[in-house]
Length: 379
Image 1 (cartoon, rainbow, N blue to C red):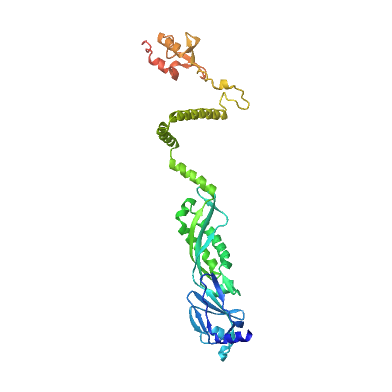
Image 2: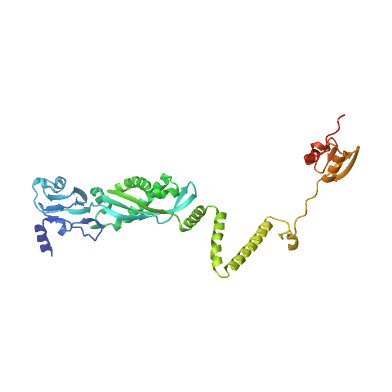
């Protein structure tokens, strides 16, 4: 095997990599027996690829798409390491890594746990978000040194979790910096995406990768918060609930009339509803400490609770007649005394609640009585 592989290595002078379409390989190390590459071999780098040469543990050169002859003319750095400047023509040992520089699209990202967001209208809320992004390797040398290292086949799954963590972390920062109200986020996905892209790009550049696209597909609330928001929206759509209830009742009458026994059933339902309403009214009155309802410390019987309140007490006045206190008189009796002249406008009167005696014409309750009485005779 050793001799045959060595002989094959001397005659195989095409170095290339055809990336399998079904695999997600970001970097591939070219396989050669003992890493021996024939001087003067052809290197083919296709579009969407870059080739990196590693010699003695250090990156020696990076080639962009094209065809190259490996000699001292187009490999100056590697030639210096190998001593080609002195005409060294034998095969040399060097590792060749092909790096995919095409754009990798439809990479998913999403928040594993809800994130806290301070909304100006609803206060602290929890949000979830997800979307997709696209990236490409724009600095093959940095990518090879920072991520690939000595991995012979570096695949996307090995770095996708790290990329996703960077994207989600910086997206949360961008969402907080946007200060967009929660209900307005749906119309500002593009704005939030641009802010996030600006924050994520520097982090990805440290690994030789550029973020080419970033999209926010959805920002949502927890199910229980969405249900409460739906209720609020439904109430706003209905508007006046009293008018809506009357409308629903009016709509139900023709249906009940067309159904045998429907009117009777509807009447029974209305009666039951009225009874329930009365019971609820009584319960609310009891909760407020209304008289006649049995509450802790209140032993009023149910019969007393249904009795009407007492009639209001008639207003009565005391009056000074012929220098002496008389009364009390109700308004009808006072009117008779005023008509007879026993009590005039200057007569002193008093009722419970007044601070002292006052002229009858100054009391508001007696003003209407003097309107029908004749004025005093002229002197």
